[in-house]
Structure formats: structure tokens, C-alpha cells
Length: 200
Image 1: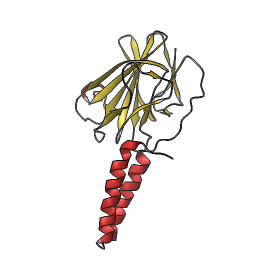
Image 2: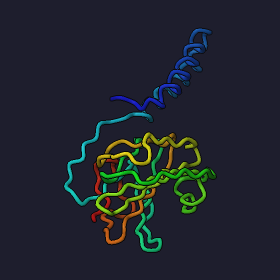
Image 3: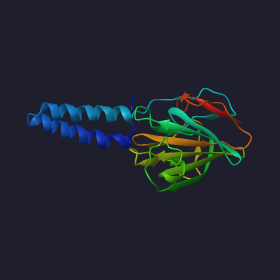
Image 4: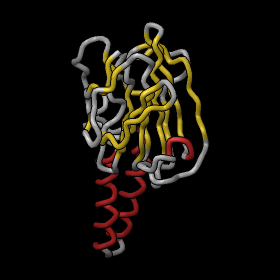
């Protein structure tokens, strides 16, 4: 299994520290840092995902657990909490054109807190398909302090295509267009690029 390129610097650093501990005769320290290096490899894993659903669906942009389903104005919104054990690659919930990307600096509250949606560091990405816009927001958490977006405004993306990642525990909010339907439940576990979370 491959890993996201952003993880290599962490793995190399931790492996180098482990090697130094071993070289100076401190195996316990070496094992600790070797374990951390292996955990980082696990965290930044980048599994292949293939969307097998039909048209008119909204796919989960992230792995994790549904921790909120709510109404904001005319839109339904769901929140997906990603623990440090989830895959942290984020994927396009629909295919279409990226019409807007907005980065907002902010706090680093625990990602499952309700006010994390408006107060934490976050990156909002809007994808338009046939006149319908789906917006999803990458939200940093208490540990996650680095949001990565690999796409630019104006680019075309396919459903489930990789668009970025959030490092070390986070949250993703999905804003559904008017007239769409949420098809997940509270507490449900979802997989980015595979699980259907809504329908047009």
C-alpha cells in the first residue's frame, strides 16, 4: 500500500532518530521511535478506492464516523470525525468543476466539537455538477494542524478522486445542495470515495 508523499518527511525523521538511539546503545529509545515511524506510515496510508455507485449520488469525502446531522438555513449538513486510526486522504464527493476554494485560519479545538465548524482552521472546497453545488470543508483538530489541498479553482475532478488530506486527526463537514437527501445516520461509519452519504 502506498502512502501520501507528505508522510515521508515524518517517517524519515523518526526512523533516523530511532537509528541514532540504536547506534548509541539505547534500544528502548530506538524501539519507541521505530514504533512512531511505523504508526506514521500507517496514518499516511493511501489505499486505492473505486466508486462503484451510480449517478446522482453524493459520496463521503472522508473515512470516519458521522457525528452530526443538522440543518443550516436551506442546507443539510453532516460532520464526519476522523480519528488518528482513519485514512486521512480526502476525496471529491461528486464529479464536476471546483468553483471555489477558501482557506480560513483559526483555532485548533477538538474536531468533534460543534463550534469547530466555524472556529477551527479549515479549508472549504465547492464542486459544481450540473448546476448543483456540493461544498465540503476540511477542518483541523486538536492534533491536526496542517490542512493540505492538492487541487485548484477551475479544475475538473471525478467523483472519489483525491483532493487533499488533513494530518493527524480531524473532521470534514459536507454541505448538501437544496433538494438533496441525506442517507446516513448518526454514528454510522463511512469510507471516503465509497460510502454514499446523499442523493440528488
